[in-house]
Image (cartoon, rainbow, N blue to C red):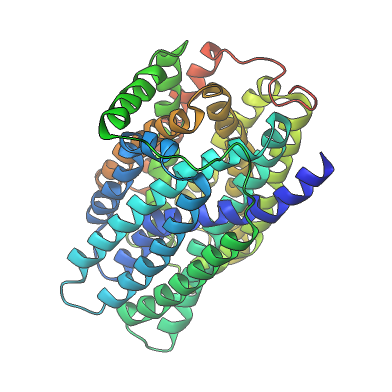
Length: 425
């Protein structure tokens, strides 16, 4: 047990950093890039909202990831592809046709990242027992969010430094994304060396096309035959309804002018806000969430964690109302939101793992996260239009109201009271 625990530390944190990094670049950092390049909020959220689609439709090809080669193979291969595509986006930004080409390459990264998610989550469930999955769910969530900090914190901060030297935004982001692609390639090579080869992840090969098609439909249909499936679907669609909208407009709000209702920060300040005290709140929240779930189980913690994830949205309501100028106060508000997210998201991800336990759990988990992505995609696409019809203050109040449907679904969930507890496996 101790040896498995020690080895898990060698690959779980870096694996979920690698999972979060391209997602954050595609979904969030892209909004900063396009804001810097002059697009409106409604344009930004509409275009970047479509980037969710590969995560929505990934269940279509997830059964093939389950039955061809190994999860380890898919993890490493997609990481190499993503690294190359990040550099490709950077090279397109100085072009007049940057919008078309950047959208194409963002889409390719999104598709590769969604495939990586299928393989990485499957590898996680195959390589760890129930207790270690529960313990590391907070760690993996934390390092996923550390990737968020590296992207929307570190990369945005670095782009701000370059722009402070009078470098045009397109050229600043070109250099940043080429560097990010190189770093991601190094991560892929690292995983090729350190990731284990668990017996539960053997080499797989389908003998013919008919077998592949039959296996696909059997796997997909079996997911929708699970007990309480529609309660699960509604919960997953509604739980992140508020977050789906806040995620898209948080960076534009921080960057927009005072006249537009924003805080008028620059890229450097936004990156610094997410890369300092925000990191502390995130890490503490994620680690505490995993430790709490491992000690008392998911059922015990789901309500406190859900509320911890929702209530910090009040920080944005406050900032949109008071328009604070003190960067330390702004960092503190972001840290509160990050802590709540890190702590509360643990329960959501652990519930997804709990629900898909059993046969075909990798494919079923991919289907579950595809439904989750749909719940992020549609509200996110229209969030810019909603914000432009209201204002930032009313918009963030609207976001807070949108957290209610997910909370309403919690009493209908059926969860084993021992799931996630130590020695429960």
